[in-house]
Image (tube, rainbow, N blue to C red; front, side):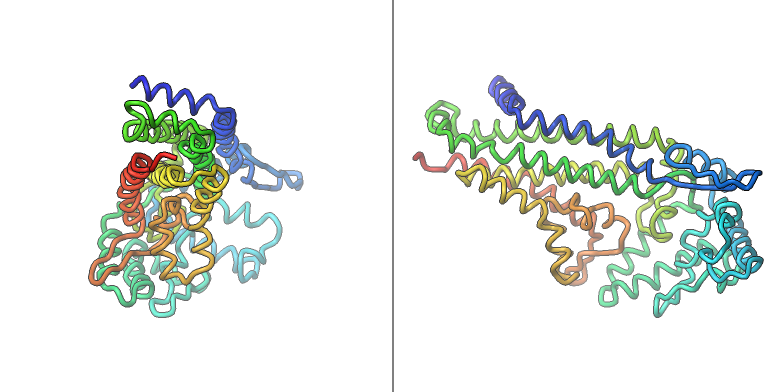
Length: 415
């Protein structure tokens, strides 16, 4: 325990570590606030003037405007929204909401607009996947809102997983467990979830910079030659270094994630966390989660991804003698999932980026998008939902890379 305290103090006293941890803390507040500034609404007052609202004022206005639709999303509410939308377009002779006169959308459609979310999706053609426009939809059929959702997940999975009936059945089974009717509370934006991932990715980079020199710097300075001559200078010393790195990186991530969620939800309104995930993303998302549960899932998954990345970085640090080379290689592994996602065919890229430690936090490949999508690992007749496959990979990689780092350091020949 004494050696662990000494190692923790040694890492935390490093100027770069203090700067990075301080920056991560400040970013937690900043990035929780930034999505708020994107909220914008406008309306005309009684004198015909256009009033523009931004930030918290815009959110408050939207909540007040949509107060009547807050709560349970019933088929009756959805049908009424479709009928009102169709009547509004007909009244102004418009084909889409973009053709409406200025101010009409905010005054007549915005109060129920969230209920239109997913309407086109559930009426998509089962063979082509092409969705009709809302004016083309028979509003009476909206009475079967949740039955249509169940039918749509079947047709979608036949398109997405044509050759994998096990994946199709797994998706249908998962969706059947989703609680219905959905819940919706106005004011929230998906931007807040995206910024949670972005913050986690930046913390991942910071922690990689902190972990990279743990072994390598001692090699470069020659301090390792002294440590290895002591009683506990090999296996136990390596374990202590890894434990200290995990504690610092894990604690920093947990603190920043907690600050982000607390500040973000306080700004948007805690009632928004009860909104069903399906009302924010696809109307037929597979997880039975609300926004609060999604935030928690992303936070825990991010922690596992960060620790797996730190474990790989420590393995590199135990084998590479130059700090710059080690850091460059470790940072390459942080952005490698993004490169793979952009450069390789989808079927291959999914397999590769999902097993890389940084995959859950690497923006386009993040576990947030994996949870909102319909991708699976398909191995013969076995199918695994992609987020579960990613988490399984991290649970294996954390102890595996750590054990290899300890072995690499302990078995390294003295020079």
